[in-house]
Amino acid sequence: MPDVITVRVQTDSDSFQEVVVKIERPTYNKPFLGGFRNMSTGVEFHNAGSQTKPKRRPDKGIQLFCRETQMVVEKNKLKQTRNTTSTQMTKIGLYVSNMTDKIISPRKYFTAEEYHKRRLEAVIVLQKYFRRWHAVNLVQNLLEQKKLRLAREAQEELQKKREKEEKLRREYDRKLNPKTKQDFELVYHDLELWMQEEIERTNRTLTGAERKAALCALLEEETELIACIGMHKLNANLENQQKAILHLLEFYKLFLKCAQPRRWKAFDGKITEMDTQSTLRGKELLEIYRSISTKDIPKDERAAVLLTLKCTVKEHECKLTQEIVALIDREVDLMSREVKECNLEGLRKRICTLFLQYIKIPEFNPGVAGLLKIPQDPLKLYKNVYFCHSCENYLPSSAFPIPANSHTIGRCRSCYQLDNEAWKREAYLKYTLILENLRKSEVDYQDDSKIVFLVQLPDLQYLVENIWNCQSALSACSDLYDLFMVRWDKQHEWSPWNTILLTKEEADAHLKLCDLQKAYEAPFIYRIKQKHIRAKNYFAQIPAMASFLHRSNNQANENFYKKPKSLK
Image: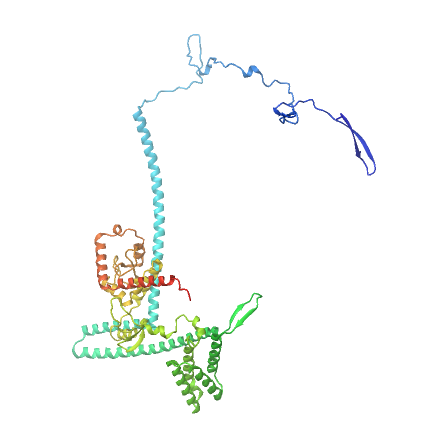
C-alpha cells in the first residue's frame, strides 16, 4: 500500500476536489506474546498484543527514583540531649539557669492495699449516686403506674356503679310497666316481699282481735293489688296481640315473594320470568287474601269472595279449615240479617288472620316452604308432644321445663308460672342472667360443650342457692347481679361439678390461672371439691345425657358421610 493516496471529496453540488492524504506508518514493534504454527501450512499465528504504543510521560527534568535510594542501608546513631532536658547541676565553672524548673515535693507513700481500698471507696460512691438516681426513677414510674391504676380503678368502679344503676332503673321500669312474663314475675315477687314484711310487722306489734282485723285488711289490700296486676296483664296481652298482628304483616311481605315468578338473566342480558305451580298457587292465594282484606265493597261481591275462599280452603280438610269455613258461614248469615259493617270488623279480622295461618302451611302453599324459619309440617311437630297433667293439654316438648335430674315429664311452663304467681312468687330474672352469661362464655370456648345447654333454670337456681349459698366463693359477695358462673378447670367443659361462682373481676382473674394447685390453698380447693361432689350427686343423670348427645352426633356424622347406593 503506497504512503500517499489521492481522495476525491465533493465540495459542492456539482464540483469535486482531489485531496492528497499521507499515510504515516509507526515504527513501533508489537511485543511477542507467544502463538502457534500450523503444521500443515507452516503459517505462524501470534497472540494479540496492544494495538498502539502507550503514551510516554513527559520528562520533568528531575530524577524521581534511583538505585541508591532504594538500596540504602539503615543506621542507628546516638545524639546528645538538649540542655533544657538535661539533668546537669550547677557547679564551679558551670551555671545552669533554673527559671524554667518546677519544684516537686514527694507525697506520702501508700501501699497497693491502700490504693485498692481507695478505688473501692470511689466505686461505692459512684454506686450510691447511681442507685439513688435509679431509685428516684423507679419510684417516679411506680407513682405514675399507681396514678394510672387508681384512675382506671375509679373509672371501672364508676362504670360498674353506672351499670348497676342502669340495671336497677331498667328493673324499676319493668316493674312500673310490666309487659312480659319476667316483668310480672318481678311484680309478684315484690308483692310477696311486701306481704311478708307487713305480716311480720303485724304479728310483732298487734295481738288478738286487732291482729286478725289487720290481717284481714292486709288480705283485702293484697286482693286489690292482684286485681290491679291482672288489669296490667290484660293490657299487656292486648299489646302482645298487636305485635302478633304486626308479625303476620311481616309474613305478608314474605307471602308476596312466594307469589312472584322465578326470574333469571339470560346470556344476552334479558330477564326471563317463569311461573311454576307454587308461584301460581301463591298468586291465587294472594288475590283471595287481598279480596277478603278489602273494605267497603258491596255485599254481593263480599259474598262471592267468601264463597271463593270457602271453596279454596275446603280442598284440604283439617281443624283450621273447618274453623275458617265456620267463620265464613257465620259472616254470610250475619250479612243476610242486615248486620252493620262495624259489627262485622272483628269477625273479618279473624277470618284474615286464620287465612294467613292457612297460607303459612307448606302443604297448602308449597312456595312458602323456603321462606319459613320453623318447619310447619304437623307430622314433625306431633312427634314431640306430651300431656300436661295439670292443665290437661297436649303441648310440644319445648313447653315443658325439664330439670336435669327428672325422670318424668311434669307440668308445663304455664302451670309452673301460675303456681309461682299463686304461692311462691319467686323472681328468676337474676338466675336467667347468670345462665345466659354462662352459655355465652361456653360458646366462646368452641369446644362442643353440651352439658351447659341441658341445665335448666331450676337446676341453676338449685346450684346457686343450695350448693354455693348465693355468694361468691372468694369474696362472699351476695349480689346476684354481680355474680358469674365459670369453669373451675378451664381445660374441661363446664358442668355442675366443674364450676365456681365468682364476681366478674374474680372470674376474669380465675380464668387467667394456669395452675390451680399453686394459686389456691389446699383448704380452699378441698371446700370447692366438696361442693363439686354434692353437685355431681344431685345431677347424676347429666353425664348419661351428654354421652347420648355425643353418640347421636357421631351417628349423624356417619350417616352424612355414607355413600348413597347406586340406582338400578
